[in-house]
Length: 483
Ligand SMILES: NC(=O)c1ccc[n+]([C@@H]2O[C@H](COP(=O)([O-])OP(=O)(O)OC[C@H]3O[C@@H](n4cnc5c(N)ncnc54)[C@H](O)[C@@H]3O)[C@@H](O)[C@H]2O)c1
Image (tube, rainbow, N blue to C red; front, side, top):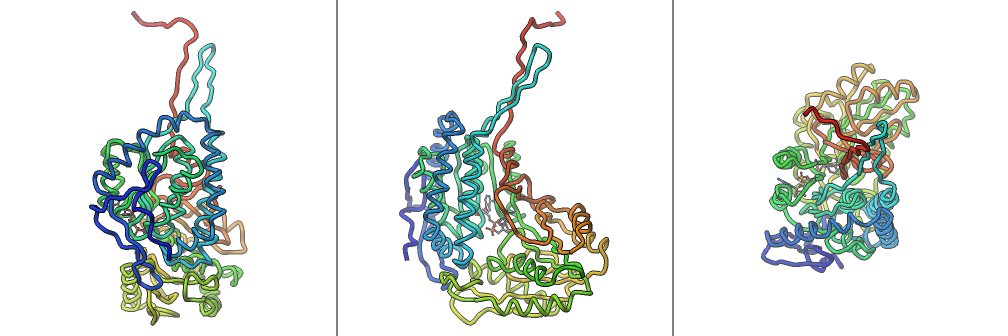
């Protein structure tokens, strides 16, 4: 297994090690084996990375957008060409099946690099004529951006943050989750190989304390976090203390509403994508599945049948469609929720158990007869646990769907398109789906409202979050003054 990285950090165009940092073991979730080790960044490493990013920023911003974009697009091509190796590594890092990683991780990262690479040359200000005078605006970078990642999509998160940041002329220091430290190093390597000057994209390892040190450092202008709501509150507060820009991509407990008139097969497929992809470890998952009573039994019967076809096993085997949880800790959290669901009286339809094999495998689990107040209907589980709730009418279900502190995503299945658009308009959520679930193309804005986040990733919207506008008033005549 070639999973031990050359060194822990990638700074100023080179791998760097400092073994004085706390060791972090890399554990393969499918077996529980230690497959690599990195060291948490020491203060000296953090300093080195921030100084490198600061030093590289002015020259990077001074390049034309076309030149920056060309480098990002070259990185996209390299990433696609190495998709197989990167996907194998992503599977070692996360335990997600190769069947998924080979289509949803490096490929999604490459999409972001290509999209923002293409956009870099189009970033302009505007001209506003005011009689003889005029105003022009300049779209300028923010400076040094810090990216902090979660463990579920390490390559994608490192790219989704890096691509728009770099396109706008910023530099970045990225800290991956301590649970999945490997893949972001490859993103840094590829960007460097594609021509990004030293210091433009750096990776440092570490736990929350390293993230906190980066967020509060005065050399940093912007922080983009993908993580849980509690971490988001801390990071947002620390950034606010120094008036730094933020993007917060946080957790959710998103609703998926299935009306009686929905196509059952598609609704079941949508519910599977909304709950069991990546073993349920997706922030936008629709884990509160509201099913209208007329379709409930047909839905549950077909869902159970379809879950029986999941191929659970070695995630590196391309036939495997369902892998382990990312870590023993996460598996235990999810087991706790499953026990709570049973204690609070939900009906276990299928699954619920840990698999009798090495690694951190849980069965895909479905609870029915879930009520709004149950813990499994209120808290983000971040595992393969679907809660099915009954409903009768549209107004009632919309109010219940919105009755949560979260607002990341929401979906609806119905053949009545007027109803679909009406329901979506009523959702308090940033990312919505009609007769689909969990699509995340780079062209579409992605992000949450309420406690689920601030700002948007992907699409043209991301440019607003990685740049700022300077306005310049130009007087062509004399200046009038009162005295
Ligand atoms: N909205 C999205 O785009 C999105 C995507 C993926 C995951 N998520 C969310 O992420 C969570 C799962 O990921 P996780 O368990 O890695 O989340 P987490 O909040 O525990 O950690 C996220 C990152 O923040 C770092 N961190 C922790 N404390 C910090 C602090 N005080 N200051 C700075 N950094 C700190 C961690 O080291 C890690 O890199 C779930 O809630 C999930 O919904 C959201």
